[in-house]
Structure formats: C-alpha cells, structure tokens
Length: 236
Image 1 (tube, rainbow, N blue to C red):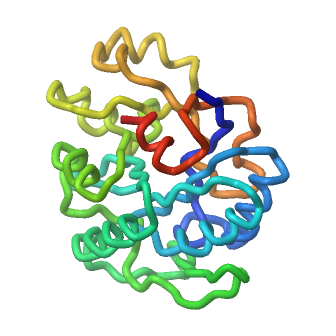
Image 2: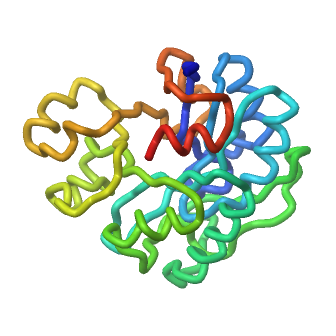
C-alpha cells in the first residue's frame, strides 16, 4: 500500500461559483506546486472540464480523477468519482438530461466556462449548473456504480446542501463507505448522532472555488497503487 496526498473536491471555472482563475491549467499547476499526488475536479452537475484536467495532470505527474459534485432532487450534494474519463462523460450526459431546465444568467450566478488544455475557453454551459437534478440520493449509489464510479456525501457538517442538514439523518439503507467533512472537529458529535458514520472513512477535501483554497498535502489516502482505479477501490 502507498499513501497519496489528496484533494478530491475541487471546482473549476465551469462551476458558476468558481473563480475565473480556476482553469484546468491553474488547478493542476497549483496541485503540482503544493505537492498533491491526486486531485479530482468536481464541478456542479458537470464533468465537462475533466478532459482538459486529465490531459494536463498527466504532463505534471499528478493523478487526476474525473468527477462531479451532483445536486440530488433533495438538494443534497454528493461527490461522484469515476475510474475512467469515458464513464465520467457518459454520466455527465445522463445528468445533463436530468438538470432543472433553467438557463444560467451570468450576471447573477457567474460564468460557466468550458476550457481546453491550453486554458482557452471553448464553450459555455447554458443551463444553470447549481440547480437540482431529478436523481434522488437513494438512487445515486447504484447509478454511479453502474458507471464504474463511487459516490460519497459532500461536506456533511455543513448547514446547507448536505445529507444531514437536508434529510435530517443518514438513511439506514445507505451504501456509501466514505463521507466528507469540512471541519474534522465535528466528527465525534456527527458519529454520536449518526451511528452509520462510525464505519465510514472520513475525507477532508477543500471544496475549493479559489486556487489558494486547494488542500495542502497534509492528509493521505492509502491505496494499492497510484491509479484512478485504485483510488475508486479505496473509497468503496
């Protein structure tokens, strides 16, 4: 086993709330400078900047996992990661068909920019990406596994758009084995009130919307090898 420093929840300039400087090149470059081994760009309800991120990461020697932060029908945020880019883009197409059909208004919500590996803007997403989908949290695990991926609830200690804040509890029929915290100091009380979490691996990702917020290399994830497949297996 090897330990990889990680940040598996990063937003690019495709997310309307992401800073315009969060281009694929800048994200991968910052991860490389900081010494992170593995990252995942997980934009709201979209994987469309993952192709550029993966191409750049290979050049920088950083492992990049294609991913998405999905917003379920209950307005619960969950991180979805995939073993391969093809599966991620197929999932992207599936989710896009299930987005709330509300157009983005850049002057209100922000730009949703799709970039190539030269950080050139090659398109924009017209539908607002921060809206909900019609995919329920209870259906999400099986759906993501069908695309050779893994999902875990995001920032469960947050007061909005989290599994516990929106549903009030962890559904007893849940199948996820990992949960994400922003503040590790909340772990004791969360496990006390939600026994399901006692058997979960806890990740602390940045949920970065700005370059300076990307994780420092202080946390590690044990995996059998440095590969996307091994990271997915470690989170199952």
